[in-house]
Image 1 (tube, rainbow, N blue to C red):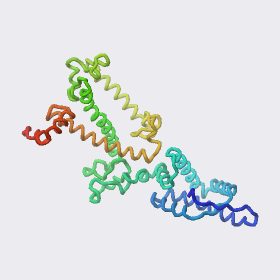
Image 2: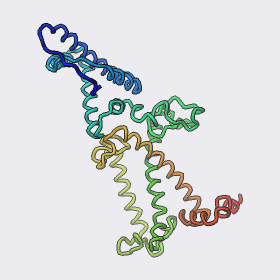
Image 3: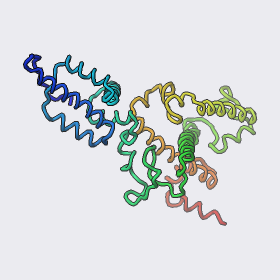
Length: 334
């Protein structure tokens, strides 16, 4: 629409009636566009914009349009739609500045996302057409609408039927997924450092070493040498309890949402673009779920083999036919 050809009209008195008609037509177009933004779906909006942009348009002089739009902004009959269009324009300008590009279909979708139409935020992973856990054979409960990231339509136990319970479970899943991602990396980190010359205990024995000679950070007693289990426990309770209470009562995370970064807690600006933020939320929950399964695997491996994940992996790669889960499963009897 921005690149369509414009044909200026000379402001002669003999053409006053034509100018008035043109101004009224432009105001009507503005109001119709605002109504479409608020009521039509994103694909329909994109098609309407593309169709309108392909045709030549005739516009009235800027001064007359300004007066007419001012009248529309003060009229009770048109003020609400006019203000909606102004807000949409401000959002479009902000998105264009962030992205550094001006593509009308992307802007229309992102404006809809910013103004609260969540299905428009990322049409690939949200809304009724999102991927389901059984594809076309999935029978999705009515309360799973695709509004939240990671919704594949699976709730066979009905755990999310109650909105309050659903909110609590959703927060718990995301927080546990974040801890699992940190833990999955932390469990293999000592083994990686040992390959670089360090002498660190395997992850499931690291905590117990405090009862022997104490825990040395990075194997160096000059950095941190923890010898009291009670002191370590008390420190963890105070620090974690304080940070969780701060988050729960509206700390940095609470400036824009209860669960996701924003405001002061988004120094890299991941949440500035609502469409990209919606996609990052999906990636986070998918990786968090995978990390929780990985941690369960770490636990089972530690019980079955008494070795760390990297040591188990190297042993399996060296002899896949004999060192695998089936071989260890036969060692356990009821």
